Image (cartoon, rainbow, N blue to C red; front, side):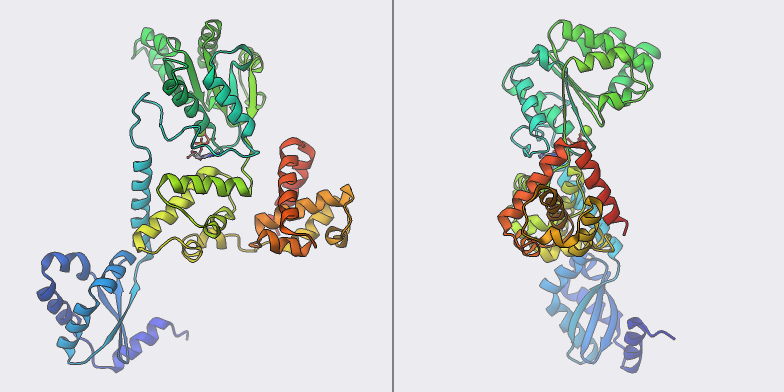
Length: 462
Ligand code: ADP
Ligand code: MG
């Protein structure tokens, strides 16, 4: 038979004179008053008594911390009065699910505060500004083009501006930044931001179901200087709406009004899209956003934390940035979760706290990738020997795979740049250079990117 800690605790309780917990609670209630009692004590239960140590169970960490910090004396005294003996107290939390719920609530509040109602255009969130956008090699071109368009909307070669890239990489942020900038710097008077799905909805109401005025629909999408349409891929397979959008497009561009469009993929890869529309798209400027590299992830986290009034030390930022996500929204979500947890427990944000909070995320990579795994896999994919990867040779056929190894070491192992350097007989600056080089190649060389993705899949599926 398996004996659990609970069984042991119970045995020890049984062997001792039982503590009259109800009496203890009554004593506390007399001392603390009804309100404090209801809030902090009524849900405490007796978990175990071992020798002179009483373990008390609290329903969540919030109550636990508060009672432990502020009311331990009341508890001790009540225990003494009820039993005639002196006990030490320790605490545990009974239900982690309750903790998670409270953390979610706090996280939700942080998000709500962040998305405070905008002052200028009703569809724009002022938090999405160019100043708040962190520039990295992954998004530099998209950023510069967006700024150029915001400064001088309607220029021929920049119309439309199309920004495409995976979800969570900053497309909506840039679109809204253009709108915010144009309004505040007065490069345009009337700006409309609309997710494509909203355009579909408006079209259906005005033209198909006729529950809204078609005149209003036309005015809404035509009486403007800048039209920002987010997630155009939602128009796929909706020929009527596409026709309508084509007309809006033609009218606005004829009047030199600026159109900016985002898409989660290259427009040519959107299936069932009107060819005329695709032709128009190719007449403008097409820019992509790639996932951020490690340094950019750190810079983004730093910026986000600063916006919430927090200055986080480098080791903390690095620990969050090593989490296996390339999606900035998810990265930000992790930061919010950590902030909520820190608020909730009253503990400062530290590497230990992050490990605690992100335990699941980090340990979900059940088989941590080791440097040795990386060397073997990269050597295999590039068809060279493992030894060459760590040798001093600077020949290109070895240097590139070595860069890839360093890139993956940074991504998958906890090693600092200096530690990674040791494996390859190089210093930290060389490792940094290698990672940058690798990111550049990822952005510019499709074949190289395919190779690296293949290696990553192999590493992930070991
Ligand atoms: P997308 O529209 O591409 O799915 P979003 O623009 O909604 O992504 O970005 C998701 C979140 O990440 C937003 O909170 C956004 O502010 C943030 N974000 C993305 N890229 C950056 C960046 N380079 N700098 C600062 N924040 C960023
Ligand atoms: Mg978006």
